[in-house]
Amino acid sequence: MIGARDWVEGASVDDAIPERWPDSRVWLVAADEIDEHLVARTVEELFAAAAAVRVDAADAHVLQWQQAFRNFGVKPRVARSSVDALLRRIGSERGLPRIGPMVDLYNAVSVLHRVPIGGEDLDQYEGFPRLLLASGDEPFPTTDHGDTIVEHPDPGEPVWADDEGVTCRRWNWRQTTRTAIGPTTRRIGFIIDSLDAPGHDGARAAADRLASFLPNAHRRVIGDDHR
Image (cartoon, rainbow, N blue to C red; front, side):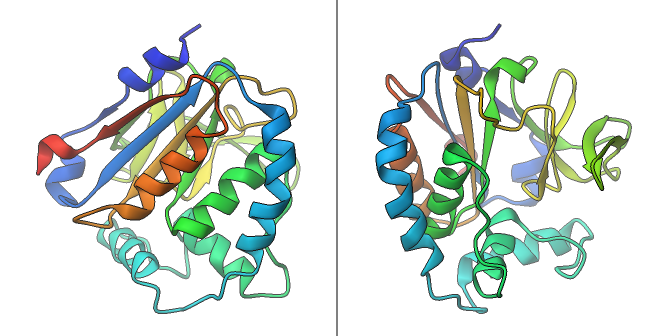
């Protein structure tokens, strides 16, 4: 079992990512313990604030991710970054989804700071997180109408992966069911992707906010060495 500190310190980004997207950066926040009481007291307020966000179709952060997806061959009508999808939910009758306290927490933080965020159950994770361009052979366990299936990414698609396979397809579009946060999750890791150069203010603020809910949180940013 890899501890939160090692999970953060062992994370890596393949050189092909900053070569194609030089403005990309990654923040990681993880802990071996969740402050469930703090989350319970705060998540409703954060969620309400996120659900009331005014959605702007021309949001610069969303447009950056749409262009990045086009760069690897995916149009917005096919798939969207996670924050783009959440904002579209807010702007529709469906509204922001309610899933569970920790998922609701990071979805709300994602919306409030306009950055894609993924949450990982560290007890289900195998090895260290890696952002890379897929070969196309990597397994991606997911569900289809309630049935468990295994998909594979497209060759050249940016994916997050561990030693078992893909943990998130199309950079930050859809997470595998294998490492998804659930009711029994007690050790947690967050991955915050950003294209918001030069300051990446949204990602920094999101990392600060998420870390405030994790006792003894471990943090790291990847990408500054590619400036």
